[in-house]
Length: 322
Ligand code: PMV
Image 1 (cartoon, rainbow, N blue to C red):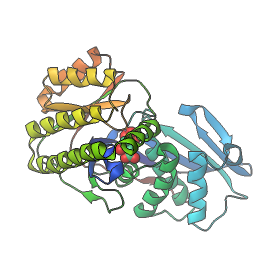
Image 2 (image 1 turned 90 degrees about the vertical axis):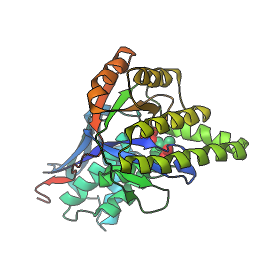
Image 3 (image 1 turned 45 degrees about the vertical axis):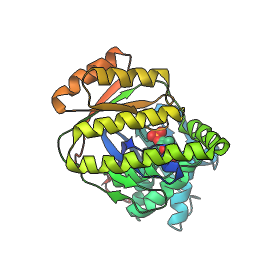
C-alpha cells in the first residue's frame, strides 16, 4: 500500500489579480490535508473511492473529464504506462472543505498523483507533480493562475507570478493567521469568470485595480520578510477593499472581516475566489483566540488557527510499489 498527503493552502494577498499577471502570496495550511492511498486490488480494473464526496466508481465509469480520472490517466501517460489490465484500488480522503478557498481540488490531485506514481515504482518529482496538477486545476477553475497547485505541491510559502518559477520567501516574526469559513460553498470558477467579464467590459478600470493589488502584494512581501504585523494588517484591509470593488466579496465575508478587526486583529480580508468560502485575519498570537471567538460568534462555520511561517513536510509515505 502506498499513500501520500498534500496540505491545504490559503492565499494571503493577490487573488484574482494574479490571473492577470500580478503577483500573489500564498502559504500552505497543514491543519487540513488530502490523503491518497493506492493498493493492489483483487479484480481487474481501477476502483476509485472518495467517501467525503460519496464517490465509488471504476475509472471508466468516471469519464475522462472527471478530475480524479484525469489525475489517474495523466500519471499513467507521464510514466509511459497503461491503465489497461491494472488491478488497483485508489482511495482519496480529505479534511479540506470543498469550494472554500483552501485548495481542496489541488491537494486531492497532488496527493493522488504522488501516491499513484510512487505505487507504480516511478515517483514523479515535484516539478512534474505540479505540472500535472495544473492540468487538472483547469477543470476546477477554467483559467487558473497555477498558484493553488504550486503551494500545495511544494508545501511552502510562495511569491507567485503566473508563468514564472515560484519564489519561496521567508516570514519573520510570530503571527497567527485566523481562517474563518463562511460555510457558503462558492465555486472559484464562477467568480473568476465574472471578474473576466467585468474586465472585458472596462479593461482600464479593472487593470488599475489589478495594478493596485499588485503593489499591495509587493509591500506585503517586504512586511512579511521584516516581520511587521501592523503593516501587514493595513495591507490586508486595503486588499479587501479592492476585492470588494472587484465584486467578489459578500455580506457574510464582510461581516466576518469586520468582526475580526473589531476583536483586535491587525487586519482581515477575504481569501481565494470570494463570494463565500474563507476569510483570513492576522493577529499577534496572544490575540488570536479572541479573534477566533469573534468569528465563531458572527457565524463562522469553522475557524482554523495557523502559525505563519511554520516549516512542515508533506509527501509520500509507505512502501512504494508492491
Ligand atoms: O479560491 P481559491 O483559493 O482556490 O483561489 C482562487 C484564486 C484566484 O486568484 C481567484 C484564481 C486563480 O486561479 O488564481
